Image 1 (cartoon, helix red, strand yellow):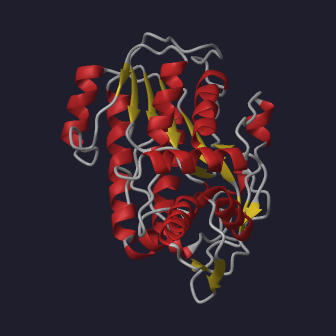
Image 2 (cartoon, rainbow, N blue to C red):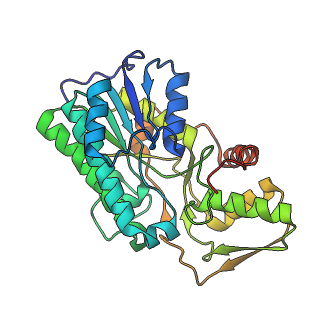
Length: 322
């Protein structure tokens, strides 16, 4: 614990910048903060503020001087996107992080939460994955560039704590899903990809749906609104150099996830698996003991979360990222 941090509710009227407030994660955090009574939320779309532009980021922080910041902005994508464009994922994310963190330091941000991803951990880490397993083994090759960028962000937060004594923290969520997700055929993660695939198959009367891989990998999924709740909880209750895992502590096979999605979508056709396509990491389950010890628990179960995400997708199908 740093001397300047007191575990108490954040000032609801202080300037609070949510970087990436239009994305899946940032929009959920914005909803959480709005619902919790924060009155001075600040957000800029990428068209208004390119976080890769260092001068623009510093001008923004000089003008608004946010007391609190959540860094949720990032270039994200699934296995295909990460494998195809590793330079983009490394370069864009490093620039976003360095610019925002340096500007926040320069202009007096007191409380900052950096959001990463569970892909920071070694591909073959013992399960469930503890925070201490960071940097103990080789990364999953299909998303190692993105993971390296996020690891750099964690170390940047730790360096600020050591050099400047600021109570900045990092949180590493598991696989997220929910309203505002990316449903595109090339850039989406597995769960929104399945939702789109099965819903299109149901509407098109397609007899067979083909999924990537064997379906055997085990994955943990957390609704993005639960993630946002955990982030505010950590900002008000946690202070430490080590990143905090954010998840449910439970995992499911991709085949099981596919079955639930098919049932909730109403697809009754055949499901096949293209085993020539990569599975990625065999299992990725986070140890969430630290988060639960701080007093937080998830509230949204997987099936109801998937059902509500399907409903959101259908309502917004004409405007979602497809």
